[in-house]
Length: 275
Image (cartoon, rainbow, N blue to C red):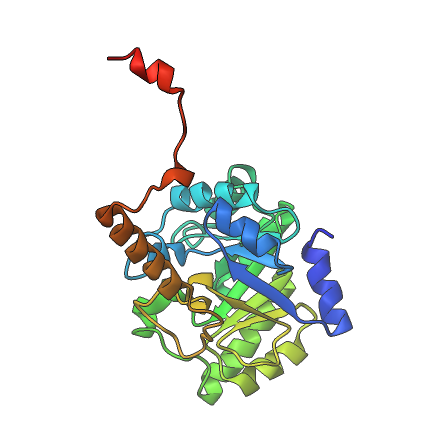
């Protein structure tokens, strides 16, 4: 059954956990979509894991649309959510609506995600009024790492914790259908989750969130530049891929690949006429 924003709300109401994984291309999207995961996120994390940037700030609207279109072609059942990149929504409410619309029309997204709390409420409200579902994102917001001074856990002081709760309520009031909580102490995330009617999706926010999201390259061991504490490696796919590459390299150089089973025949009589 196709997952929608309504599915998220129904699952929270029933106490069922929501799952979300990233994907950035057609082939991976098909694999994730066929696994039963509820949502696919085309994250601006593609800047790190696909384009090799040190952060997500350099990612453009064109990058997001390009990857989103590919993922959309491979997604049938999961809810496709696409990140709004840096400065595609912070500059004005108008820009936010226009760029969210581009991700829906050109990128074939089912919803968009943007970072920020109460200060982004006007953008969230305007986008949702344009009939575009919005997933909010608070706590550690990677587009703001230059303000935070790096990738740091958020909400650890009383003031910061209260601000996080206020932000969560503000994005809900503005119309967000869900909110990602990133790098937030588990007990604080539990309070936020109980305080909201909309689902919380945790990433480094403990087990009491309504759902969990991970970057797929992290959880299958395909990205080693940086390993957050909250990532669990569910498989070592990267090692398997490297071994396959090494075997290919060795067999080609040894002359054992391609073998007869990997080649095509032609009638010897035709070959004899070519000389």
